[in-house]
Length: 421
Image (tube, rainbow, N blue to C red):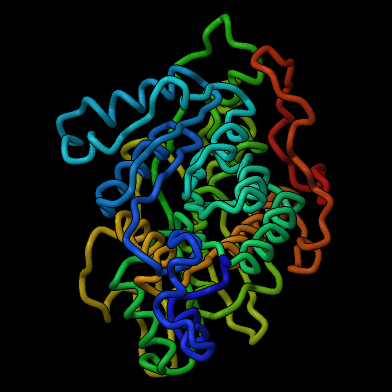
């Protein structure tokens, strides 16, 4: 039934003489586009990013209710719930936050409890190390998905996600990612014009994401075990965040893959930690990286990302150079609504059949692996190809989970010492 559309059902019903009365034989919610029924959403990952995703989907869609929440930490969940229901800024959506105490789950397997509920949509907003397992579970539960980017921190995770992505397509599940440029009208219109030849043949690409650090925990509480500490300070540890190249610079790399209609075939990258102290708070990721990607047609993408302290130069920009001109990616489009709301609006329209069917799972997986290619090149000091990345055996995920679990972080990668696997 998931694959049946309202239009095809009407056509088939007319052909068999059933007519409109045939709609009484099945539940409307089983037919894509059958009605404007209310949808229930569940949130997995109740930090700042997850809370904002809930705000955005409820703001964009008056027919969506939030009914289930799950997080590793109870304080994160309760803090998110207070922000959604009690902050005056969210007064317009507070009545549709209907998460009773029996549907608030705080544990390492809370995602399973959310999947087992009667929600239509799950929002996957934990740190990206968990994304492959959570997405796989969502697809197996036949839920539609809003999936934050990136979708993994290692190649094994990407392949697991890709397998679930194929299944989600077969089931006709709607999947929208947190790569919000795909919902931003200036980007959409500019990319279309570039593909229609507005700048001629593309000859070179440039991207920068030069910013400050995203987050650090203020300090380690003495009662936190290693695993709890790494979760509360997640942006400092490779296994759970993927490094800046994967977690943040993803936006630029994903955009360039969109422009090119494909992924690069190889990359050589360099990087390191220029200012991050070799202290527990700062974990084992780099603070700067430059990459030279090559696409199959020979076009090169030169990219640079860094997270330096406040007061340093910052810039986020892109440049597409063609034989007839150039573009910054947004200069040939008109401003639309907030893309962070638009992406959730697009998801619901896809589910209900009011808009085009959307499933961005595979494209966001390819962009994530593109970023992992560059990170692994910088860490190891070698050229990494797409085929090498697809065959990589790197699996960063812990084999056990617990708040008090002993978990020593690997050292900062050193090129020539660190080995690509």
